[in-house]
Image (cartoon, rainbow, N blue to C red; front, side):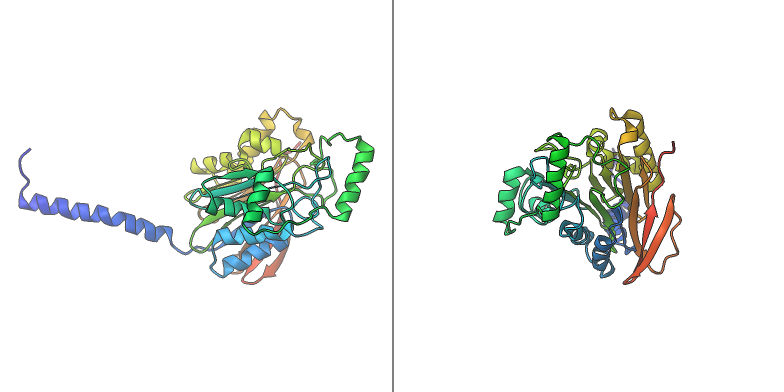
Amino acid sequence: MPNPTRREFLKRTAAAGALASLPLASKAASRRRVRPVAIATWNNQAALEAAWDVLIGNGYALDAVERGVHVPEADPNDRSVGLGGHPDRDGRVTLDSCIMDERFRCGSVAAIEDILHPVSVARKVMEETPHVMLVGDGARQFAIEQGFAATNLLTEQSEREWREWTEANGYRPTINSERRDWPEDNHDTCGMIAIDTENRLSGACTTSGWAYKLRGRVGDSPIIGAGLYVDGQIGAATATGHGEEMIRMAAAHTIVERMRGGLSPQEACQQAVEHIHRNTPTDPTEIQAGLLAIDQKGDFGGYALQRGFNYVVALPESEPEPSVKGEITDSRAVQGGIIYLIEAPYIPG
């Protein structure tokens, strides 16, 4: 090939310089300030407000979701997360939790006992170890080594209900303890996803799991890709309901991949629920699946298998009331924002 002329050399040099500047421009674009948004399963308004306080102060979405799910983890009246959660059939409260940031970093604990905030142990797994998941006694030992205090999570009320269940059911695990016809306040997983003003996505998912489950049972909540998944360039998703189906269908990961293919968060959630409905080996009329998603622009959506799944979303107060699939049933002002309670749409019939 002949040597380039001086003019050609200068043109190539200029082009190379322009290309070299693109990563800097992309980084600047990726750090553009956006409106913060947080969304959580069920009517977890107190949890969402705790997360919103972090976001409205220009804090990190990872800190926001961790602080947010601390609220139900420490609430003895929330019977399906953390302290006061329903025990397994042997009367032992075992917790599952995970956390994930925008860079695919993630941590998880499963079947951990005696630790009040398993989500924070999961974050320690992410930040302090080369692993993603620790389980059982090993997870508990790690938590103690990291300075977490051992705490009795079985409250008097939970123990009394467990004993009553044992007498009535003969030590057989309840098959449909997450049925849609349970009392309205008997919810399960708290899943939360958020985007902050620096355009960073994060999520957390935490639960005490299926009431009176077989000892050792682990659901979707600590499984990356099932109960929670985050891709900082695309979006995040979380799940609640019958964990076995979320694991079978890799529910959260499925939603994010459908958003990658161009679907909105609402469309992606609906398609994922429809996929569960068509393919689950379980009778779909006997289980619930509630899915939530948020994309990199802060748009959000939710969809359910059955009637009765609601969720909460926090948006800046300067924004108009969101147009959503489903129904806004309540709203209240918080510092710099508004929390909306939304009844999710569901598969009819």
